[in-house]
Amino acid sequence: MFIDKNVYAQQPKTYEFTVLTYNIYHGEDPYNPGKANIDSVANLINIYRPDFVMLQEVDSMTNRLAGVYGQRINWMKELGKKTGMHAYFSKAISFSDGGYGEGLLSRKKLKFTTVQLPAPKGGEDRSMISVEYPLGKKKKIIVVGTHLCHEYEENRIAQLKLINESFAATGFPYILAGDLNLTPASAEYKQEIQSKWIDAALAANKTDNTFSSKEPDRRIDYVLLDKKAKWQVTAVEVIPVMYSDHMPMLVKLELEY
Image 1 (cartoon, rainbow, N blue to C red):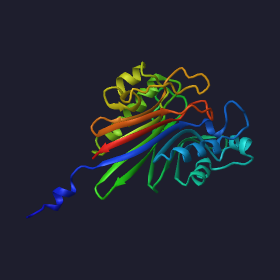
Image 2: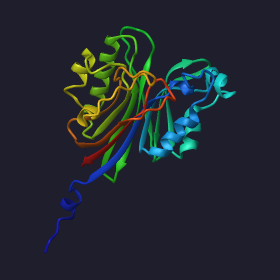
Image 3: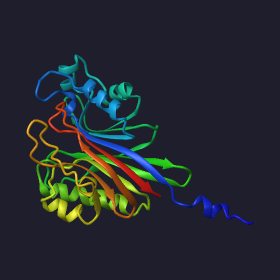
């Protein structure tokens, strides 16, 4: 009996991923000024053991961190040590003699890319960080973290447009997660998310508010999945901790690919 090994090798498999997104308030407890939150964030990650962690409002080597930690530190590098994960930092702006932007943790060592996002209305510059995560020789997924503009709708629309254009033509499944600074009722969501992405929280019917951690009254943190791929959202949890002014969002996924 003849078996075509190439056909057999191309049969779809099911892959499982756990993703955590968290705006960490630059590494400080917002309700206890001067108190570091890195150990709390690390313990949370070690409990839930996600494959990917996307972090926003990350300081690196800033004087602001020195005021909290006693010295200027590479916050992502230190978090990587505490979690045993590979850490990457994406600088969006120069700030306080250091950098400020996004962070990403991965269980595997990966190459990462930083892309600056447009800000046609001005305001604070933003960036996105992405990694390509291999699934064997020919398959991979793209994992993206970002923190969109908090000031202007026009900026958020332009930023989402660039993100959508950057990954739509790759042919690979992709995940976008982060603090998007918009609600599902916003024009940005309706124009650039609703028709182009699977909103994991909505798919799981678990649309709990994520901000603020003290009085949660809006959902502005998301895990989004491209609609072309065969994703299944198996669990969504907004974790009720107050290490930051946001709450972390954990999503478990299956991908047939």
